[in-house]
Image (cartoon, rainbow, N blue to C red; front, side, top):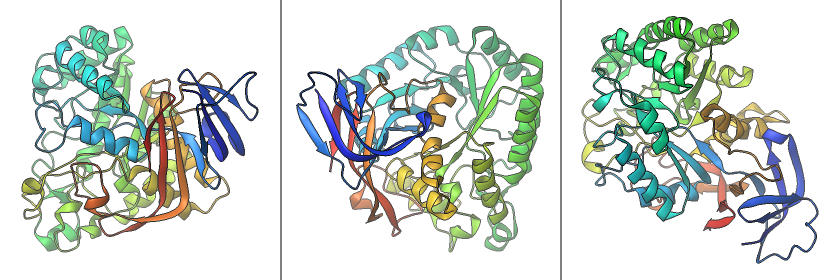
Length: 426
């Protein structure tokens, strides 16, 4: 398909572009910006007047629930949610059932995703067999099958010696290990941020030191091995201070935050709202402010949706018994725009978009998130001013639970282009 996107405000943070111009697509790639290539005749023209044209979003944490949890969501429902939210590239954790610890499982997932032809799916392989934290997986075989890194999802490794061996192996072959820093013992079984609110509500707490103790351990192991580590969904001011210092020291570490943590605090639990039961838990206002500071100074490399669809049977329960997680694919763009609006800077929108496009792609080592000539034609067209109401019926995801139900947000996706083909159009 030859595609002409005309009169849109092209924002491409990777290439420093922010101007009203035309975009020309053919053979799945960006062919030209501004003037049409010689002999170019469009099959389809999209009028983007009044819209922002940006690289398709890159989401570093989206649970698609297949294989094994199809009663919570299916690959098809979540990939439709992705393109409806402007997300064209997805990184999915290995905590499926069975766990993504065998090349055949990874190949099957990739094959299913390719057949649906909606968005690009990049799995993370399990770091240890069955995520049990005992024996390492065959990382080379998993990489050949299509894994872009290795993770433990939400299961911390009890034996630090196993993590040391994993990082030594990963360093030898140039693999990236994705870890969510959490001490395996401190805060185990906790459901909310340790603080006055959790005490008042009688909820078991997860203290900030569950994150910082794990970070200290990870940084010591990185110093010893030189392995590249991506830290997933940092939640605290103290954790960000440690990461800032580690980066200044030159350690090969990157980090992301979940988009919910840009806006919400533990106070948003309200009267035991299980939609606000997340992992890591929503923390204090001071921690939320530190996340904004970390985004502005570059300590935080990317923002992710932390998309975790949960069904009614597991969510409509008392707070402490409900499964953690919230739908996020269709909210990632709007919540990032909401954060940008709060910054009120001239370059706030391009800087915010960078965290969910170019910076996220670079962090994951993926050829995505930018629209230079020759780049893959993964594109989102959205109206930054159009407001929409978050309600379950409006969400394509099978997971209908989010702490933002009832909110009115700006930024509605009008079309999503994946590989030069219109994958979604409102």
